[in-house]
Length: 250
Image: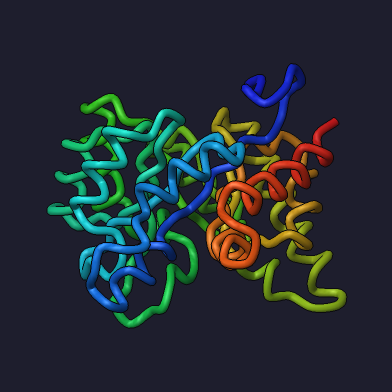
């Protein structure tokens, strides 16, 4: 884990997903709110990275956004996308710090479920190779399943981002069971030499246990921070999340 710019001790890196800002803009197909401005404010609030998802259907982030984000973001960039060749080519041209491969289905509201790396190694392997040829670090968004983690390692992924959606939706005893699954998958991730990231459905309440998972390096959070930002502003919403996860570090 690297030392954060926001302190002298090792801290979990906080990536802020700005897709929902673009979703609001596209509802009217106008020019505001601008996700590029949101990214700048998120940086001021303490974000260590900016995450954005260029989908095939362009439902929120547009190619214009990708170009401007890559020209203006001063922290690391984490670009999400599926394995469609057109999008992989765009990502290689944009050259973000990280390329996060995710499953993508047009009928879904947001990304649901992890990438089935074990069953779809052909497309995933080809995308990983192309990204690495352009010096882009590769992360795979997968379920908390040791078999998927092992498959990711075999394909040469630099990191896995564990899908925390089932944990976020769990209630009562299921919460501890989902947290155990995340912890065990995280242990395998570390043992296989990959960075451990997590995200999806995390909010200001449920993020703490995930942040305390051993060897957790990065959390990517979008919807809850964007929702909070509507009430208190982007910088303060990011700063609040920053303070919460910093307290969880040893």
